[in-house]
Length: 242
Ligand SMILES: [Mg+2]
Image (cartoon, rainbow, N blue to C red; front, side):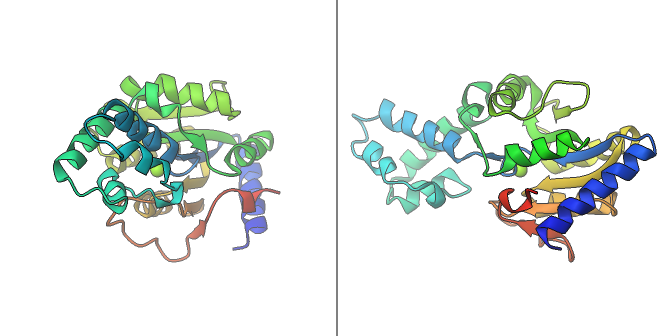
C-alpha cells in the first residue's frame, strides 16, 4: 500500500469509528517507533567514559567517533564494534547502562524519529486519539516520558489522548501489550498501530485484523519473528505525511 493511501485508509476508518460513536485509536509505541533511543544510550556511554577517563583512557575519544547508525541493539556489541576487547570492561559498562537506561532521568535524552511529531499531530487534528502504548514502566519512567512527549510537541495528557505504561518493570513487553488488547477493544476502535517490533505488529494484526498495523523499520530485538504477510513497513514517518 502506498503511503498516501495508508493515510487515507486510516482517516477513513477513523471517520467510520467516530460516526459509530467510538473513539478512533491509533496505538503508538515509543521506543524505536516515535522515539530514537540512541541519544539516550550514547549519553550513558559518554557518562561512563567521562567518569572512568583515568582508568580507561581512550574510551571517551573512541565514543566521539561513534556514528548513531553504528549503535547496535546491545551495548556490548556497540563497544566491540568500536574495538573494545576487555570483556570485564564491557560488562561494567553494560551494568552502568542498565542502571540508567530505564529511568526518568535518562529517557529525556531521547529524540523523536523524523516526522513522528508532525504525523501524530496530523492524526490528532483529524480526530484520532493517540494511545501511546509502551513497554516502559510507570514507576520508573512515567514522569520522564510525559516530560519528553510534551517538550517535543506530541499531544499528551488531555481527554482525547491516552498513555499506557507497564505497572512494573519485570513484565515482558509482549505479555503486557497482549494484556492491554481487551481494554483497547472495550474503550475504542483501534484503526492503526505503529510498532518497531514485528512480533508486536503481528500480535495487533491478529487482535485487530481491520486495523492498519505498520512496522517502523528502525531496529528490533535480536531474534524477532518475520513480519506477517501483507503488513506494511516504513523507514520513518516522513513518507506518511499528507
Ligand atoms: Mg518499541
